[in-house]
Image (cartoon, rainbow over all chains, first blue to last red; front, top):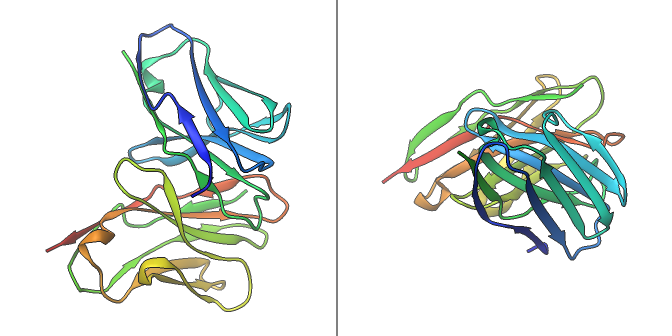
Length: 113
Length: 113
C-alpha cells in the first residue's frame, strides 16, 4: 500500500470554525490532490499541488485553501466551516497524472454542525 | 475539457452472475482510462487502467474492461461476481498533458446471495 495518511480521520465541528485537514505521504510523489466525496456526486477535485508551493484550484475550490511547504505534506483548510462542507475528504498522490495511478488515503469524515 | 458519465448509479446482481458497469467519457484529446473500487469506509483502489495497446485490459479480482474509442466507452465486466465484489466502482479519465483526473459519479454494485 502507498504510504498515505490523513489526519484526523473523523472530526465534528461547528459552523464558522476553522478546520485543517492534513495529508502526509512517504512516497516522495510530486502530485497531491484533495477531493471531497458526496452521494450522487462521486469525487470532486478541490485543489491539487504539482510541487512544493505550487498549487491550483479544482472544480469545487470555493471556501477551501491549501498549502504545501514540504513534499510530504498537503494541508486543506476550511477558513470558516459551513454545513455544506460536511463530507468525506480524500487525499491522493501520484508521480504523473497522465500515465500514473492515483493512490488514495483512507479519508477524513468531517461533520459541520 | 474532459468528463465521465457512469450510466448506472446502482446495479444489483445475483452471486455468480455476470455484470457490466458502464462508463462513457467525453474528450477532444486522447485519454487514459481507469477503474477504481471503493469498499465501505475505505479509500479508492485501482482495479485496472488503459494507457495504450490492447483495448482489452485485465485487472485484479477477475475484472476486465474494454476501451472502445469509436463509442468513447470503457465498460467494466466480470463473468461471475462474488459477494466480496459488493462495493462502489468509479471510472476516471486523465490526459497526458493535464494535471487532473476526472471521476464519474460512481456505480454501487450489490451482489445478492
